[in-house]
Amino acid sequence: MMGYVLPPPAPVSLPVYGSTDRFPVRRIFCVGRNYADHGIEMGGDPTKEPPFFFTKPADAVVESGSTIPYPPATKDFHYEGELVVALGRGGSNINEADAVTHVWGYAAGNDLTRRDLQDEAKATRRPWDMAKGFDLSAVVGLIHQGQSLPDAMLTLTVDGVVRQETKLSLMIWDVPGIIAYLSRLVTLAPGDLIFTGTPAGVGALQRGQTCIVTVEGLTPATVTIV
Image 1 (spheres, helix red, strand yellow):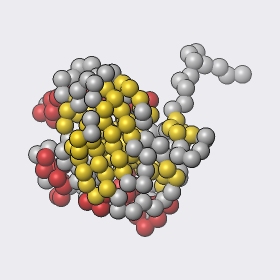
Image 2 (image 1 turned 180 degrees about the vertical axis):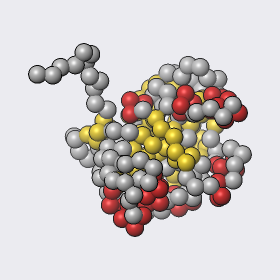
Image 3 (image 1 turned 90 degrees about the horizontal axis):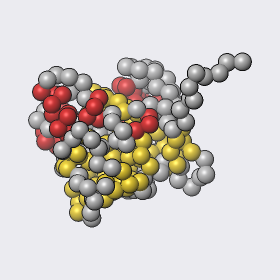
């Protein structure tokens, strides 16, 4: 009988709204510059770009309501409020017209970022991994099951002050388009999460602050920094 030379890591999962069952997390994909205002804010022209993606490890997940430490190796730690898509079906070369049938549910999320490391990586044309995929960098609220989501408002507050606010319809690439495009790059699988991009208004978080991402119809994603 086969064993392991080391104890295997515990599976990563997230709570589901209205259920005691949990959603298993396989991979985390993130869309860059999916709102025109944020693209301009970051010095780009996203209206001319196809979607591009970066990843976070599954164990970067932080459940809503958590308190986490200010991360090491940064002096410019940023929030990015986003809609998160949880996939229930996988596949490759998915037709955009059918892409929503691959969705299991949705959640509010916060793509925490070491902005100074990201700026350095951009300047030196190096990968973003240490800017985006560090420990405790993917805050996700309760996952709500369902394939349809109305044109909801996404809002992010820091200590009660609104810092980001947008309609989901202002995404350059909508959810079906994101799924279809990404499935031409990798074979998607049940349990994959997709962070769909952030609007303008990104900014720094400090120790002692609480950041809340709200998407209408979903449970907020809350995190406190110490």
